Image (cartoon, rainbow, N blue to C red; front, side, top):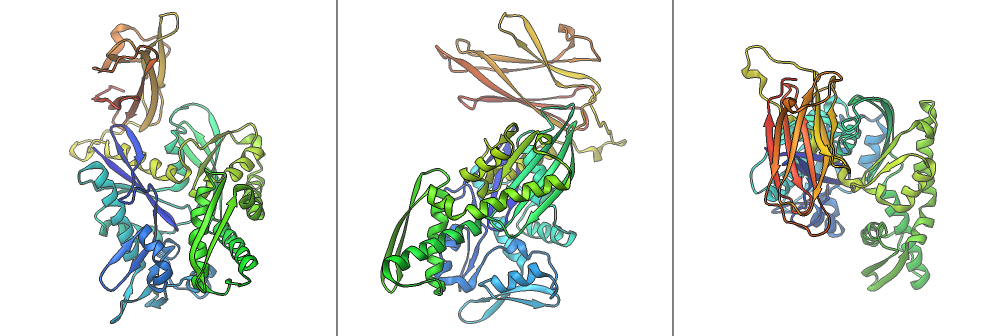
Length: 512
């Protein structure tokens, strides 16, 4: 069974699918793995994503952006965030019966659109993207929400998802999804650890300190700063480009909304490029009075321009650590998520703050949260329907050790405990099995034991065989085993050859 994880941010949305024991982000019809959360309205159609974002220069008053900031909120003249959004929105926002609506001018008439309807279109785009990748219809979804989302906002998000055809399995917090993406708490079943989740998105910075204990998450502190985000880096770069244009052509375009929007688009593209390249070229056709603008920006220049903003990004971490009376040594891992966390300079500053701490950024930061949501969706879809049972079976932890058999360098059998007795359920583990490249089939054997007894042949309860592998003259087969134990004690095992993608899966009823 396939399931979906969706992360809707203020500036972008991303969808991941969970299938065959793995979660991965899928690209949209434009080939992009992240879709701008922008909807543009015209007389005859509604456009979602990159095309809507690019058309905002000529259709700005009918283009809805950052809808998440106002979704599910009630009108209040005393709410500074709401008033700030209304003031900054280029698409007119009005209040009607205590709720917000966008005024869309379609040419012949003005129509009113609810924020929920805008979100529905974005979710529909995510659903289409996932189904296109899977080649089949799928509706089960886990959706992420920030810690500061209230009940009204969660309800509005759920209603929009339902209207888009989703079956919402659960709403989970964004930091929890980030931990799930890396298997934190699942791969170390015993002992406490403290994880800092650093999410720098398009419009805000959210930092959480989470205690992980036997697969359970407890939030120690969290803080969100709406004055720091990717859009502020873009604005700083756009202002620099405007000053360069003025220096070259003696025209100040800072008061020209259309010209500045063109510079914002160019700066946004350059900002993304500078996360991987040493320099980026900004070219704007007919920026002002028929004049073309061409400017090359180095990564060093970008880092200098945004240096005050980067310092703010780090200062927020220090403040949160002080709040929980932690030092950097009390943090065991740092998880990066959010598109702006890709910026190399920012990653280096975080490493400098936590020199002895593991910085997790192997998953692209803007894909971490949807991958975690999809992982949760996969676990939930795998649950047995206990409503069919007369007496619901509630097993909260495994009673036996579950082990996998391997061979060490000397050729002797070696057993690795994946689920120690007492592991809270549901739980998920990953295990990499290496086998000589000269063989064409690999067998994964699973054992169970009680207490301190060693596993013996009579304790073997399952095996899964991966056949017809391509032989390698040199090297090893890398087999990734993903084991998910459900609340009822049953175990789902998937083995995948990392080179070819060949996969086998079994489900075992374990008396745990």
